[in-house]
Length: 413
Image (cartoon, rainbow, N blue to C red; front, top):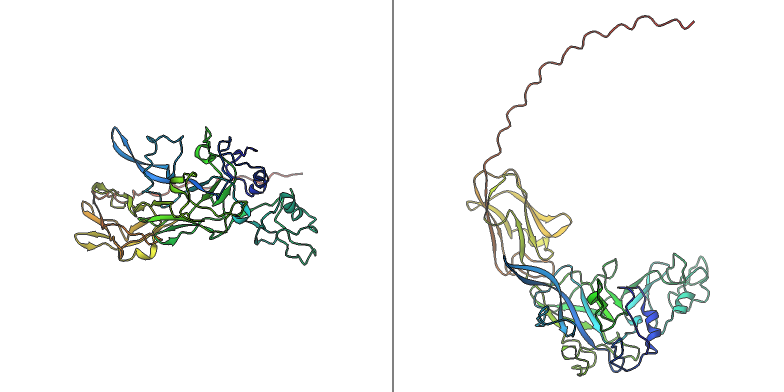
């Protein structure tokens, strides 16, 4: 059996090369890759970034950590991961890694960018030589992909190959074939850009040392959601069109144990995890602050992108029960943050409250998650800034006196 080793974190279209290795794969589960080509492709582990409590001498703090949401692995000791599932997954900036026990047919997962800017599906069985025929300058033999005719050349457009290395420049994950369903709704995935959803055909069941670590486990479907709805359970749905090289769809056995049977063909419903509830994580000023400058900036930081349409009527700045005129809006370039800008300086030595309405009719995040309760932040301003007084009079401008007489112009003769 030919070993399939991790050579990079991701390589666009690397499945074209990995597919050749799969043809020589054997059924030995104890090989140095520990891949298992026999039977349907099974999910062995799912990793999710979670907000976890950390006990320190000074108390409890929180840390973002990659945790096992499904399955098991002997190199992850129970003390570093309690293996009780994930209940507090990050709503934003999360990466969900789905580890498969064998190679999948990459053509069922990705599309290639054509030279006319469109994306096209890749027929199963496409080889690197087929892609090379559709790259470079001479594309007369292009019959595999991006075969639409370029009227200017009379040849197929072929794949985008700006550097003319006879390989495609860009691949993209197909939309809708892998879904994170949170609270009953599929979450949008990032399909383009540096931090995107992709298929990683490299890797095995041995965790490498160094910086790669868990990213070396594979093959893997690496999912980058735009965000996930807060306070709900998410499940994984993989289309039956995503198959291995024998045409079998992906399924999830109990706890990722490939010795057990999946509930049904193509069933991945055993994979699930909980997402953190929508919550305020930081405020400026903080609750209970005193001596706050009367010209201070006021902001609220949340753990998910805020639905700006739910801000009016659900956030107020008050003193003595009276609303303080202010502009309340999403902070520029920071959709998790709300900026409160009073129309003028606050009154000195005065108690103010920021009141946020929770519940289904209150402030929401963009996927519909609600604050569990109303939130109130109280702070007190300090003294008024000292009066700088009038600007000192600099006095009259000194008289520079008459301009000195330069005398007659010298005779050049």
